[in-house]
Length: 272
Ligand SMILES: Cc1cc2nc3c(=O)[nH]c(=O)nc-3n(C[C@H](O)[C@H](O)[C@H](O)COP(=O)(O)O)c2cc1C
Image (tube, rainbow, N blue to C red; front, side):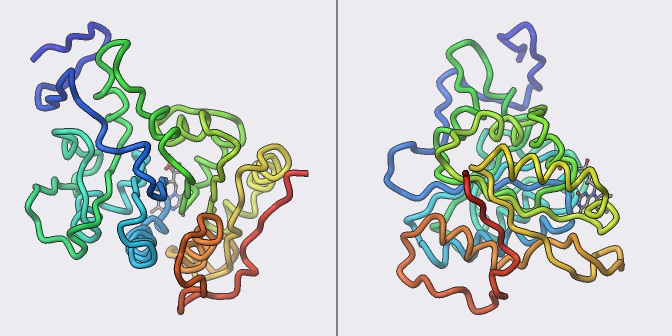
């Protein structure tokens, strides 16, 4: 199949029809949580966050995940779909993968939470859906859909892009188009050497001072995957869920999750 759009070379397996409808509903009355995964080892915590949100909210929440290309080195979208249930959001999106370890997740797999589906989006989907000027623009549709965006983990690279307004992939395009009346929660995670670099402080300061809709969930001191001990580890996933639930409300039992550490590592700020 040749691309109907002369500027883009759409691989033949990506059979997105002209009539393709985005697989999410803007007006279903549910809580819409968009999660961003970036290229940090802490991305492996994302399935825990998703499962906990489903445990708390059941079918009152809809969750979609946007992967950066490098996040896929740490969390395998196919396995995430197997563990929490869900679908690649566009036909054929399971391949080609960015990383050889990634494999497709054929429909009909046994998922642990069969009624709770998530959609997974990758950079290629943005272009896969763009056929003509009537096509949905994915980062704009996701921005309209989301009640909140959680980026956990937030890599040093994506932090730098956010602080400087860069938008060269799906996730940063969503952030750049974000409606400031809605919250973005970010949980930075990086090696201590990266975290203690003055550039990191500068970028975090820009966010604190100029982007009051973005709240920083402070990293913590821990033994990092590389063996170094120090500041820069992502906040405990349970604390991140607690922070998200505080923002979203609507939970029947607002007591913190059992494994929560004190919320002292959570930083909110005042728009003023
Ligand atoms: C094994 C390994 C672990 C990494 N862990 C982190 C990390 O925890 N935090 C971080 O900011 N960058 C980390 N990086 C570097 C990022 O993956 C890299 O800067 C990447 O460009 C981030 O891309 P993204 O922000 O588009 O996801 C790691 C790289 C490797 C190879």
